[in-house]
Image (cartoon, chains in turn blue, brown):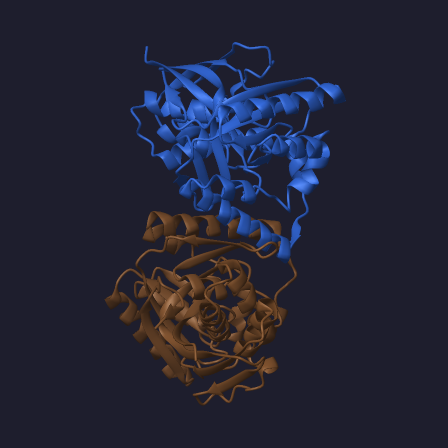
Length: 305
Length: 305
């Protein structure tokens, strides 16, 4: 029986000013999956974790991705998948994307890589659609490709890899629930032109900073005048965490994806660890449980083990 | 008497998707200016062209810039300036910026470069304020620095030079009047979030394309879903010019600044010249007089001769 084992990383979407167009992959946490090719058209799912995720293919993120691969492949095949999830669902660090992207890459591998990267991204986006109601690629693309990804456009899909600097990433996941669909619904459908201009200045600055390895420019550009002022209301302690992390030396950061996780970028590991302490302090005082990660940018994306 | 002669280049602001934040300098056309230092606090202006520009310092773009330099320098000095304008006022290729930036750089040179680049840009922005009512730097910055400039923010001023590819630029200036202030007033003050997202994807793509020297990405990113659909109404033949230039091989392009000039980027000189013919054809048929330029990106900015 053809079989593959893969590691699929967590991701930070949006990167503060790049709502829906930027994302980066993390070296921690990541999910482990094992996929086998079956000779009958069915999908069998085993969850090896405590998250009570559905095992019916149509209701499971990895499941719908595998169904879409089967449909496109047009052959008499099926898949059996075992998922060991370490990225908590609803954390805002790309848990659904890791399932979706991992399943898509693994399935393509078992089929002899007959599909292009763009097609693999398209398969994986079906999983995002199930999870959040919207086909978006700002977690999927960096999860598959590693590093920093720019999704210039969705129709037609246009993904560009951006050279990523060797930065440290601190993530805190306060254990509160923020549903991606809610975080999307509270956004205003119209924005002021002057705010949009400020935002696109920052996006251009951030991309230039990444490519020039200019840490100060990255820090200055990590500013969001459109999404963060609205979404941060859903995250207790956000303003305080952000202010204190920057005082502790972080270049900057903000909400990871649609939250509730908050991420910060730092130049070196000791700063990133100091930032972690600051984050913990705030949530200890507020009295909200959390997980934290101090990690680096994952340059490989989904990995065949 | 201390004296300096400079050449100040025309510029293309906005670069389609980068409204108010991007601009590039042209090798043609450019203005020539001669500036002398006086030992009494006055500004004498001589215009060596047929544009009937004012000679009272307070009403002249270069004049107000020199007045602001005198005020900041705080010394008993004045300037005499002779301006030989080749960039037609109101053309949309940075005529006022060339006067303002040229005067600011020349004055700083005569004073022993006591002011920083940011201060020189600030002086020059006073000229833009007089010309268009708004302090903007998307012509000023590339005029002074050469190449492609990103104005990440105006408050506080944050200008970043972006490595610029060796592209050819074709410009046509149809001889119609589009006032910068009118072109600004017709813009909607609110934009759809989904359009803003599309726009910032393109901006990130354009900047990445410039830095990676990726001509196809530059071409795909030269798309403006916010400003161009409104402003292009003021420019007869715009849609036809754009479509036919792209058919003739141009990577893309659009309105230069607030118009009426239209610019196109091309990979090589022969394509840029073919694009010029296409542009001329359209305006010959419509019956509007024009000037055209086939040139390259100016990497030096204002030059001391």
